Amino acid sequence: MKSEQKFIQEFDAVVVGAGFSGLYMLHRLRDAGYSVRVFEAADNVGGTWYWNRYPGARCDVESIYYNYTFSEEILNDWNWSSRYAEQPEILSYINFVADKLDLRKDIQFQTRITAAHYDEKAHNWKLQAGKSIIIAKYFIPAIGCLSASNIPNFKGLETFKGEMYHTGRWPHEKVNFSGKRVGVIGTGSSGIQAIPVIAKEAGHLTIFQRTPQYSAPARNHAYDQDVLIQTRENYKEIRQQMYTSMHGVPQTPREISALQDTPEERERVYEEAWNQGGLFTLLYSYSDIGFIPEANETVADFIRTKISSTVKDPEVAQRLMPNYFFGTKRPIIDTDYFETYNRENVKLVDVRATSIQEITPNGLRTSDAEYELDMIVFATGFDAMTGPLFKIDIRGKDGLGLKEKWGGGANLKTYLGLSTAGFPNMFMLTGPQSPSVLSNMMVSIEQHIDWVTDCINYLETNNLQEFEAMPEAEEAWSEQCRATAAMTLLPHADSWYMGANIDGKPRGFLAFAGGVGVYRQICDLVAASEYEGFSKV
Ligand code: FAD
Ligand code: N01
Image (cartoon, rainbow, N blue to C red):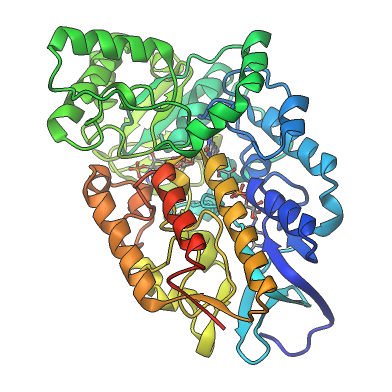
């Protein structure tokens, strides 16, 4: 850390990031009487919903569940307009909460934390932001799992003369596609949300697809007032269901194998789920879809049939057919995605068959052809989970870097996804090896923050200086994460859950796949045992 620093600020806790996590963390710690400062790179609150302003961006967990649940007052004061709220509405909600809880006064915007070093003698963290040094006993990265946007290092990228955008760094001003020749690279959740909207406005849209996706209709619709009232009336019960569930939504998988039903009955069940919409509805149709290849194949087949009956050109339909296990990438729900390929101004290019060679001044060249474009939209995702952490020079005891300790991710080791040995008093919110990205993130976020707040209260009450995962505890947890994922089909996909989307990123399942309910129980037991597996000094 540079020595000629100008400003020094000191707090009990420093939180990095002002998305859903950072805001709630600030609220809890401030309420508990600690001095807290949040540092945020953006010029406002919102995190994901601040950055991802691309057309069509909306949530995939129903709005009434994709919100904070800690305050009945906030629940009662906010009315979601539709089943899957759009990005501007979610951002307004976050702003509403920030104002209501008067959070902004403790947030420093437009401030990127570039380094965080642990001082073993002083038992505190020193963070660097520009010329400032911030000192705090507790360092809490609330930097998001999907905040490090990824633009692949295509040859010729800098030569493109047109406009280029990444979905996760979308400008605040409206982007005008009207009459333009637009190229979208990527067909993950972001691409699949943006493509139908861009297609309606663009002169021509070319979609460069590397891996086809399973996607089902979201069936978005305006909320009936009665639904909102009923949800409020039953919120305690609903919340309990979310807390104890697999993915943080008040739904459970049917307790029957897909292989037990007749093909006709399966068809009926899948058809019903297809018509109902919902992120986990197809996955929950049978208990073994996520575990047994033959069971998984029944739903994969069902979706492929839907694609071929929706897309009129059989060759295009064929190119859109996924052939890996359904549900091994985050499920996708869409609005008119496959229908978009029936438009005359839309072309699908399979860049697995004919790979992208370079970006040219006038467009993009594959091994097969050159495409003239006025605009390129990179819907190419994120360096997920470890990416945002590695962007900060985090150093623990003996000056050991986090990236170094984790071997760039090849040797990822955490205890509960919250803490890692050698990095005392650092709490990662929804970090690697926690359920986070596999769940309704709001449930995971609140759970982590409640746990961390209780833990800090415990440490302060007991006058403890240092709190750190024990090596054997993180060894066991990392093995449990690996073994739990191995019981599922999840590690079979080339997904960002596996680090497969980033060139050179080590492969390994990045989250805890045992479910938010089980995870909560484990965390609660650890807390009840006075933090077994952690050393406390
Ligand atoms: P983020 O919202 O990512 O916030 C992290 C903040 O930290 C950012 O503002 C960033 O600028 C800041 N930051 C990072 N590094 C630094 C640094 N070094 N210094 C200063 N500031 C820094 N999850 C769901 O459960 N349901 C959904 O429907 C859903 N939809 C999504 C849609 C999109 C387009 C994306 C990308 C993700 C979606 N997610 C969804 C996941 C989403 O990321 C989480 O639900 C949630 O918003 C994460 O909140 P967070 O506060 O943990 O992180
Ligand atoms: O990113 P992705 P995303 N050449 O990594 C392709 C959440 N989210 O931003 O699959 C060509 O899923 C890549 O191809 P492949 C949600 O958790 C939620 O879409 O790696 N193509 C893929 O098609 C989600 O899972 C919502 O072969 C390249 C695409 O780019 C997560 O965020 C909305 C390439 C990237 O897809 C990430 O979603 C948006 C290359 N070199 C996001 N590199 C909701 O609906 C990458 N690709 C709520």
